Image (cartoon, rainbow over all chains, first blue to last red; front, side):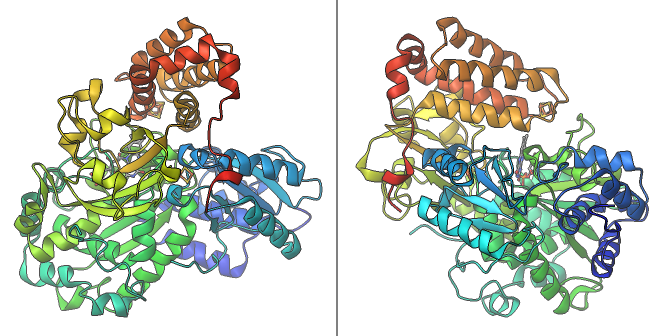
Length: 181
Length: 446
Ligand SMILES: Cc1cc2nc3c(=O)[nH]c(=O)nc-3n(C[C@H](O)[C@H](O)[C@H](O)COP(=O)(O)O)c2cc1C
Ligand code: SF4
Ligand code: FES
């Protein structure tokens, strides 16, 4: 149980998971684990609790420990509760060269938390992450499915206000906002 | 203007969609390969083209393909490496986002050449929105008879799937990628056996970078010989370069191999020079893993020849005075950059991303990060600089996968070329700490 809800995929998610399992040869359904964990994380409050991992194991017909083994390896999976919006700012070289440290310290001040922490209202978690493949449009950050690039401190302020007023949980699996190419 | 093969149509409005892509000559390589060529003939063209892997190592693609074992009755796999996590590299994202069908087309043609009936594109989890773009393109390709059973009425059938990762640089290493694709932790495998013999699910497998697979399209369309005419020496064709850092025009550029580095940095067609008219200090030419070079050595080789954007020219002088083309992640640093702090940034990255299987890498990357932090903090000693050198030399070549080398080379090259800067940090920590280590965002122009 998470927040008193029964742990079970919605019908749509379950259908998607079953389609995913068919992408792999027979007996190799474990290959679907990472995509399925993304769906689970999005559906069950943004993190993977023990019971959620056990549920995923039962869906894929593998051992719970296999799920934990994999989930604990990857940085995009949260094994502890997180805020509705996880703000992930790139801290690697190309972003650092053009001001990523300023973006991070600005967000720390604005949200009144340190990197790795969650605001007391449960709205924001701040993370610093390694290169997200957006170095030519640095500095940048990712929130859910969306990349926010060529950041300025003003842009960061506007975005934080937007997320706050929307109040929605952001997941990697969300439909991304249309991007101007 | 250099010749463009991959990005020649990226500016066309609507090129993301099947219709527009097809109207602009899309899927011609599939048609040509499936209807007029044997799989072996396709492999032959790729061999003739001289195409080298664009993921970083530069291994000849045709040769890799011809190593693929073909036991009777055993499935073979083509897996596209779209993990793109090498700091400074963003060309694959650009390509997949703008012209997704080019990758799909390349995957079909390459899968036909290798005799695969199921192929996968493994894409880093952070590119989730790009995986959606690819999935749409794949659905369009199925709907128009380019995927599925009996493609375009031929005997050839293929299913193509996209698989997302979940944040781990190491999954770009091909055997870690295969582990991840099997749903496991991304721990690189001990080689041999190589994937060509035992890869995905223990079956013969080819892993190729996004750009490598995309390049198969013009090679089949125009012929391997035509492709090989572009470029210089054993660096044939064009290369996508991801340019970032202190330049006026960061972005992805398709260059003909052999372009002088100086022209790439300073001409308006490419990077447009250093931001704010400042002086160039250093360049990391091929993604964070390759040796950093100071301005004089990136513009000219030790022998005084102009340095060119090619595998051979960038490597000229070995690690003493040269570097590597790598993934083409071209990071430019101006005179205000602290090399020591940038190195700490890289070392933290490798420590964070080490999978932890081998002690030299797991422990050594952490030690290097800590020693660098101590130096940056003003508590370093001259012995610490020698210690750094010692640690990196004990990682290089002593690990299961090349991440260990990738962590060692930036340290070795930074000390080799910028030792005096490390010494200043040790001797005058106070004055150095006051130095601006990086642009403050408020001052940068956007
Ligand atoms: C630590 C590490 C990370 C790597 N990351 C990538 C990557 O993100 N993308 C990629 O194509 N190759 C990457 N490679 C290289 C792959 O192992 C492999 O050589 C490549 O995908 C082969 O494709 P190619 O021959 O087409 O270049 C990485 C290698 C190492 C050791
Ligand atoms: S070198 Fe590092 S990343 Fe590679 S297998 Fe060893 S510990 Fe893992
Ligand atoms: S360094 Fe920040 S996106 Fe690459």
